Length: 162
View 1 (cartoon, rainbow, N blue to C red):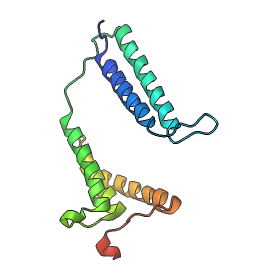
View 2: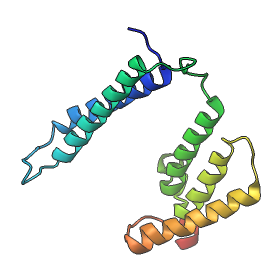
View 3: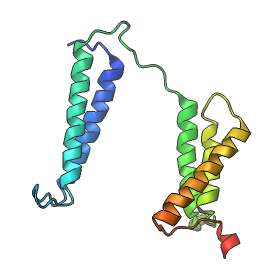
């Protein structure tokens, strides 16, 4: 068996493993029936469908010839680092770290901080564009999550709101 597209093979494998894990995890919940679905029914079906998609992608990678074998390139460490750091920063800014005395900064500051950090993942950095994007994301997130969905979490830093 010869892998003709490494990218397709390993992405299919990722789908298969993730789908299998979701399907396996869903078995811990009550499945119910098609007429009365339990909490595990939808994750089970979704996991199975994801695994089936993975099998099809892996099958394609073994049967369809590609020009150069679509080799997997080297890891893009810079984007990976900044995107992970941005996600961690979002959680810290939104909720704070009480164990070391960092207060919650709220949604708006978290979005601005995350957008600034994640923007360093690209090849170019334009502060004006990043600030415009952060402003649009902040307004949209405030409108969607706080006003429309009525979710209760800090919007502004605790030292401002009290």
